[in-house]
Amino acid sequence: MRESRRSPLKSAVPSNIVSPVRRCSRTACGRPAVATLTYVYADSTAVLGPLATYAEPHCYDLCAEHSERLTAPRGWEVVRLSDPSAPTRPSGDDLEALANAVREAARPQDRGADGRGGPYAADPMEVARRGHLRVLRSPDS
Image (cartoon, rainbow, N blue to C red; front, side, top):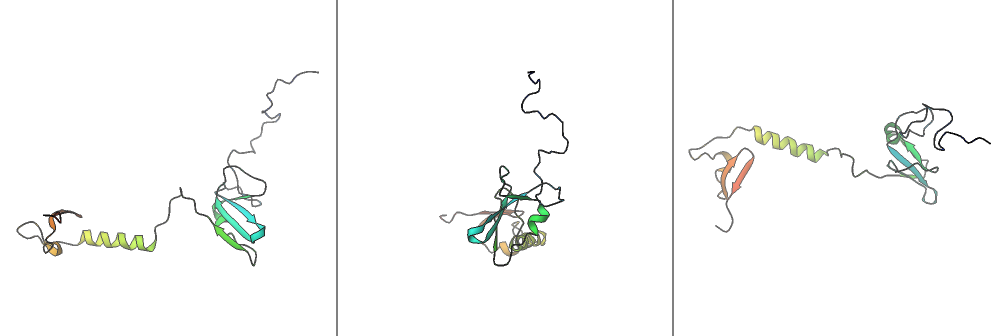
Protein backbone atom coordinates (compact mmCIF):
# COMPACT_ATOMS: atom_id res chain seq x y z
CA MET A 1 0.00 0.00 0.00
CA ARG A 2 1.33 3.45 -0.94
CA GLU A 3 1.46 6.33 1.53
CA SER A 4 -0.04 9.62 0.53
CA ARG A 5 2.29 12.57 0.13
CA ARG A 6 -0.45 15.03 1.04
CA SER A 7 -0.76 16.21 4.61
CA PRO A 8 -3.98 15.13 6.35
CA LEU A 9 -5.24 18.74 6.48
CA LYS A 10 -5.04 19.42 2.74
CA SER A 11 -7.96 18.59 0.54
CA ALA A 12 -7.50 16.44 -2.53
CA VAL A 13 -9.32 19.09 -4.56
CA PRO A 14 -8.52 22.76 -3.98
CA SER A 15 -11.65 24.80 -3.43
CA ASN A 16 -12.29 28.51 -3.85
CA ILE A 17 -15.88 28.11 -2.65
CA VAL A 18 -15.09 27.69 1.06
CA SER A 19 -14.26 31.01 2.68
CA PRO A 20 -12.69 31.64 6.09
CA VAL A 21 -15.34 34.34 6.64
CA ARG A 22 -18.57 33.03 8.13
CA ARG A 23 -21.57 33.73 5.93
CA CYS A 24 -25.24 34.36 6.66
CA SER A 25 -27.23 31.16 7.25
CA ARG A 26 -30.22 32.39 5.25
CA THR A 27 -30.75 30.66 1.93
CA ALA A 28 -29.12 32.42 -1.06
CA CYS A 29 -27.54 35.09 1.14
CA GLY A 30 -23.78 35.26 0.83
CA ARG A 31 -23.14 38.34 2.96
CA PRO A 32 -20.75 38.10 5.94
CA ALA A 33 -22.35 37.17 9.25
CA VAL A 34 -22.40 39.77 12.05
CA ALA A 35 -24.78 38.19 14.59
CA THR A 36 -25.71 34.76 15.95
CA LEU A 37 -29.29 33.62 16.50
CA THR A 38 -30.13 30.97 19.10
CA TYR A 39 -33.55 29.64 20.04
CA VAL A 40 -34.48 28.82 23.66
CA TYR A 41 -37.46 26.59 23.08
CA ALA A 42 -38.31 26.17 26.79
CA ASP A 43 -38.82 29.94 27.16
CA SER A 44 -40.20 30.58 23.65
CA THR A 45 -37.38 33.06 23.12
CA ALA A 46 -35.12 33.89 20.18
CA VAL A 47 -31.80 35.37 21.32
CA LEU A 48 -29.87 37.49 18.83
CA GLY A 49 -26.40 38.48 19.94
CA PRO A 50 -22.94 39.28 18.63
CA LEU A 51 -21.30 36.79 16.30
CA ALA A 52 -20.33 33.68 18.29
CA THR A 53 -16.66 32.77 18.57
CA TYR A 54 -17.20 29.57 16.59
CA ALA A 55 -20.03 28.14 14.52
CA GLU A 56 -22.32 25.65 16.22
CA PRO A 57 -24.87 23.41 14.51
CA HIS A 58 -27.84 24.65 16.59
CA CYS A 59 -27.12 28.37 16.04
CA TYR A 60 -27.68 30.51 12.98
CA ASP A 61 -25.29 33.21 11.78
CA LEU A 62 -27.03 36.22 10.26
CA CYS A 63 -25.85 39.21 8.21
CA ALA A 64 -26.66 42.77 9.27
CA GLU A 65 -29.77 43.02 7.07
CA HIS A 66 -31.31 39.74 8.21
CA SER A 67 -30.49 40.40 11.89
CA GLU A 68 -32.27 43.78 11.73
CA ARG A 69 -35.36 42.32 10.03
CA LEU A 70 -35.61 39.32 12.37
CA THR A 71 -39.08 38.55 13.72
CA ALA A 72 -40.16 35.72 15.98
CA PRO A 73 -43.22 33.50 15.74
CA ARG A 74 -46.40 34.64 17.48
CA GLY A 75 -46.09 34.21 21.24
CA TRP A 76 -42.28 34.24 21.13
CA GLU A 77 -40.02 36.99 22.42
CA VAL A 78 -36.90 38.33 20.67
CA VAL A 79 -34.04 39.28 22.97
CA ARG A 80 -31.37 41.40 21.27
CA LEU A 81 -28.06 41.42 23.10
CA SER A 82 -25.80 44.36 22.30
CA ASP A 83 -22.12 43.99 21.50
CA PRO A 84 -20.15 46.06 24.05
CA SER A 85 -17.27 46.52 21.61
CA ALA A 86 -19.51 47.84 18.86
CA PRO A 87 -19.86 51.59 18.49
CA THR A 88 -23.10 52.91 19.92
CA ARG A 89 -25.36 55.30 18.09
CA PRO A 90 -25.78 58.70 19.70
CA SER A 91 -29.08 59.23 21.46
CA GLY A 92 -31.34 62.24 21.01
CA ASP A 93 -30.05 63.67 24.29
CA ASP A 94 -26.44 63.41 23.08
CA LEU A 95 -27.26 65.20 19.85
CA GLU A 96 -29.19 67.93 21.66
CA ALA A 97 -26.33 68.49 24.11
CA LEU A 98 -23.88 68.72 21.21
CA ALA A 99 -26.08 71.22 19.38
CA ASN A 100 -26.40 73.35 22.53
CA ALA A 101 -22.63 73.33 23.02
CA VAL A 102 -22.06 74.43 19.42
CA ARG A 103 -24.64 77.24 19.79
CA GLU A 104 -22.98 78.40 23.01
CA ALA A 105 -19.52 78.40 21.45
CA ALA A 106 -20.76 80.34 18.40
CA ARG A 107 -22.61 82.97 20.45
CA PRO A 108 -20.78 86.33 20.35
CA GLN A 109 -19.60 87.52 23.75
CA ASP A 110 -19.30 91.12 24.91
CA ARG A 111 -15.83 91.76 26.29
CA GLY A 112 -15.37 94.20 29.15
CA ALA A 113 -12.22 96.09 30.16
CA ASP A 114 -11.03 93.16 32.28
CA GLY A 115 -11.37 90.67 29.37
CA ARG A 116 -14.36 88.95 30.90
CA GLY A 117 -17.82 89.57 29.64
CA GLY A 118 -21.27 88.29 28.98
CA PRO A 119 -23.01 86.04 31.48
CA TYR A 120 -19.73 84.99 33.10
CA ALA A 121 -18.75 88.48 34.32
CA ALA A 122 -21.12 88.18 37.29
CA ASP A 123 -19.69 84.82 38.40
CA PRO A 124 -17.39 85.54 41.39
CA MET A 125 -15.86 82.05 41.18
CA GLU A 126 -14.57 82.52 37.61
CA VAL A 127 -10.98 83.79 37.39
CA ALA A 128 -10.33 83.46 33.64
CA ARG A 129 -11.85 82.04 30.49
CA ARG A 130 -10.34 80.70 27.27
CA GLY A 131 -12.82 79.48 24.69
CA HIS A 132 -15.16 77.01 26.39
CA LEU A 133 -12.77 76.41 29.33
CA ARG A 134 -13.04 78.36 32.58
CA VAL A 135 -10.63 78.72 35.48
CA LEU A 136 -12.52 78.81 38.75
CA ARG A 137 -11.40 80.16 42.11
CA SER A 138 -11.05 77.59 44.86
CA PRO A 139 -14.07 77.65 47.23
CA ASP A 140 -11.62 77.87 50.18
CA SER A 141 -10.11 81.21 49.10
